[in-house]
Length: 413
Image (cartoon, rainbow, N blue to C red; front, side, top):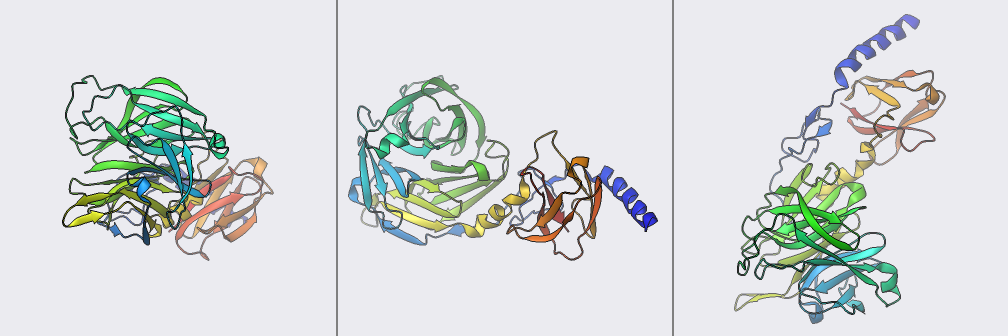
């Protein structure tokens, strides 16, 4: 028996030297070019065309006929108009009825195009710039959430200019790449997704999220193939969604997920057509990445087209549930703190473990995509062998007791 274990240990050591290198490729099984051996998503996934229809659509009150932003907070959907109206409206998530109205005093609505949030504030983007592309008063209003709840909004301002916009000659209507209608807020920054009327792409700019005056610097770009009008972001899930439409007013969404840091276009990028022809979709929000809300402005072109302002509810489970369910399998260990090594990984019949002596006598469990334990045991010494023949192919998480970060992804072939 001792000889047998020694042989396996030597084999594990030899395999380890060959398999610790990451394999780059498409890691999304929904993609055409999915590579089951890939362990590092390189953003190369390609997808079949897809479309989605709303589960339900309701007409919104006429007072929000130019709804232009959407944020889910405090049990409601918060929206605003992109005209001179300086009020926020809280909508019922099912009926679209106005539950509350909050007046924002001592501010001007030049062209409010987006609303986003973090834990403490709502952010309204007064940065619509399609009239001539030459605004020099671009700003974001920051409003304390707690002050909204007391109906006494406390507002401050983040002023900015695009660092690479040098020409402010009036360009005429809808003739600039420096328009913006989409914004997300992270733990430390604001990210703008521009609406490029000329290039039909988007540029992502970043700036601080504290009051002041800043230059917004470009960080990435992508050929969207249309006009981006709204964005929503789940930072802890590495999921962002963009909404927009083509020049023929065909709405779409872009699903961005499994990206690195705030490099939104470095991971999976999937375009989903929205089955609402001639709808001017302007805003999108979600709390979980599956149940998604969008609104459209009223749009009329007699005698054929007459689409009122509406709230639409979508189910994106077919596109994101697998990724979101597997998120627990993709926990990252901070650099320098890798206490457990698995090899080979992906594995077939067995997997070898090497770990710090401090983990000896700790209990371990192997969790599936639902978080259920399929294997468990106790670590001894600083190495172990786990028999995988009793579990099916898939992605699992090796979890060790008493520490949230002692977790490693395991792929069972």
